[in-house]
Image (cartoon, rainbow, N blue to C red; front, side, top):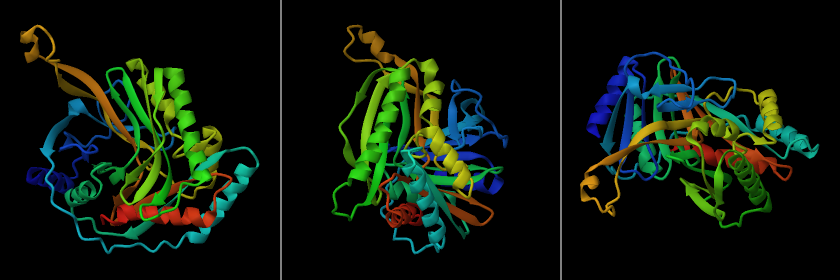
Length: 364
């Protein structure tokens, strides 16, 4: 990992665009270093590289193209646990957020929406000295999440630890998940009816989208999933699909009910009208798009000579950009939010966002 440290520190000093990331429970860290400083926008979902998509559907997605980037990988070194960070930010926007929650609940009670996901941003002065150390803390603290540090001089630096898969593809297999509901791992309470209903809404919407675009849709039993210091409700969903329709599926899924609401168009309008800041890449998605993956042919084949051959297939690993921060010009911004339904209690929702903010505060 010393080579990766040197690579990232040199890129940071020279304002070279890069992304370094760790897939959940993988033994390796991957790094893509762009060969120039151009800002490249995704043209279509047949491209290959690392994609970074914003929340707004009207805003273009960015990509580090495979053919314009140097790709390297490094074995993860377990450096042990870090001491708990003492860094904190004064979260003084409580009343404004409570007022926003009340507006959303009243709007939902009119019947126009079933769910609206609202968020806020917490900001502070901060001196980020080493993207590598930030990445290492993310991997160490959240090995089962998708962790990353992404940088472009025209955008700034983003980093995060996402527990939520948007799309995992290999050949014609498609996997995603419905993730909703939050409680601290110390909590002994049962999941509430509100939380179960919210998570079922997400599941039903994703299943409807995949049924429209794919075949053989399979839905797992709902289970409790740990993500850092939080528990969530999770359902896994699989299907088969036509690979040229990946863009159509992603356009249908994003933004999911877990980060926007239901119906999506009405929730999106409420968010655009009432949230007082630009989410940018928070609650967008990011990750590997159509990256070549090498696999050994089956050893069960009768022709032993064929065992020497490996096949190349394209695979995508895309994650919703949750539990994240951005950094630019000496300021750090942490993004948090939660799903609101007619049964939401504003003070509980405020506490949920405070719990979620600890994911990033822990690594600063």
